[in-house]
Amino acid sequence: MTTAVRLRGVEKRFPRVHALRGVDLDIEQGEFFALLGPNGAGKTTLISILAGLTRASAGSVEIMGFDVTRQYREARRALGVVPQELVYDPFFTVRETLRLQSGYFGLRRNDAWIDELLDNLGLADKADTYTRRLSGGMKRRVLVAQALVHKPPVIVLDEPTAGVDVELRQSLWAFIRRLNREGHSVVLTTHYLEEAEALCKRVAMLKEGRVVALDRTDNLLRAGAERRLLLDLDASELPASLQPLLIGGEGRHFILDLPDYGDLEGILANLREAGIGIRDMSLAQADLEKVFLKIMNATTERT
Image (cartoon, rainbow, N blue to C red; front, side, top):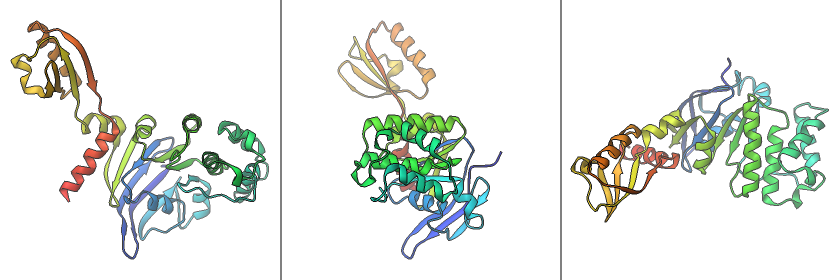
């Protein structure tokens, strides 16, 4: 199977900034992949290289096996990018915009797919409206439609839901999930880490132009974040056997470290043996935001 996106030793130097520093990355066909990092980490530079808007200073980049420099026509056709900025031509309607975009890829009879895009992205009633008259959220929907109009096998979404309403988020993700199920590879950059956690099977984290973490989302959640057990008991003191796990609390409320979910059974058994009843209990679940902050802070300390 051809790898959807392959980067080897990718470097990008600007006069005053070393934006990318030896990035190696493989994104497989049909994968929903998150590319995360703080502002200035190099995400937008990497996307610009994929899209052919800028050239890497060193290294190689392939999309569906096509080199983005030597085989740029094939590479461009294989890629659809939803940019972070709102870019549109105010003198065309939504439908005209999508027909024009289709023409860039030599697609003459694309109205059936355009109608499907309009319907799935909630743009059907705006098809004959000039783009300049659309709200910001509607303009972003048009950007998504433009990126998908030629049915690219690789879709890059750069902050696609920044500043948009809940309705758009839900309809957008439902449609993108469908495309992913049909085999499209999706690369997502977002500051809404709950989106990446819910959607993406694998995550790469960039910092200062380097990949500082790359793993399956579930592995990062298991290994990178501390688990906490919150207890509300009918006693004001824990059994001695549980004292080593105590990391906080007040009165009858206790916060215990939970090294592994399998340890929960032993904690409950200790409470039963001590005759201590549980009035309430909850787990502080690991989330991708905590993992992200921990990894970013750890790499800062090492440097």
